[in-house]
Length: 112
Length: 114
Image 1 (cartoon, rainbow over the protein chains, first blue to last red):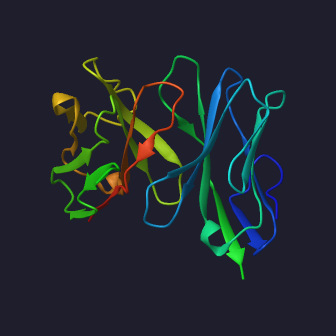
Image 2 (cartoon, each protein chain N blue to C red):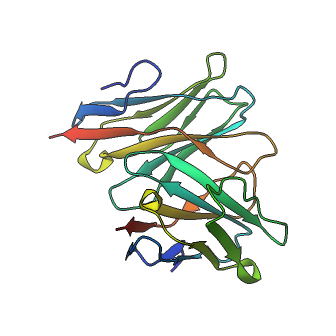
Image 3 (cartoon, rainbow over the protein chains, first blue to last red):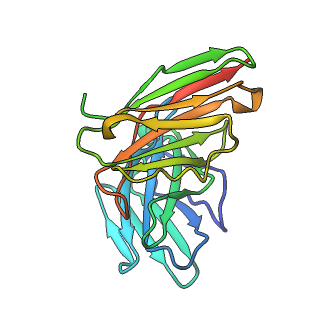
């Protein structure tokens, strides 16, 4: 399953399929990006980060891609599992700044 | 515990009352943040503390909101004369440094103003 365009608030994906969550960030000067996962009733949990000198970074079952030309960030989840159901937020950080600016979030629902 | 701890988990208060929300950051983390999350929305920055520096209060929505951080550790967010629009989840986060690093979040305090 994939959220296309700038941003879709919801994404439904079949268990076992790959998921792609997209995020358009706002500031071309941002040099640090994070993806957070937030399950119901919990605080956001770090998934993976990437700095602007990289295009791609891989973690366990997750990959983050950064396209600075079009200010686009994506999170790919391989072999999506029921436990991946959550809201996913991208966040950006400007150089020499400390505040993370968060996107609106994408709700991912995994179908059994 | 090793994570960021917030209390209470839930708070229901009457309109016009004052509330205090507490955050215990991860030990040794110098940076502490408060964010607000309204239902179905993203995270809105409220205030930031770093060491002994003056806090960045630029995100506080009104003068009814204030926060303190005592001894560089525990922080309290106070909302005076609460209004219904203050109902939200208030999230605290801490990080070991202040820039370009992961922030660790607590579970949040769900505030409901009735």
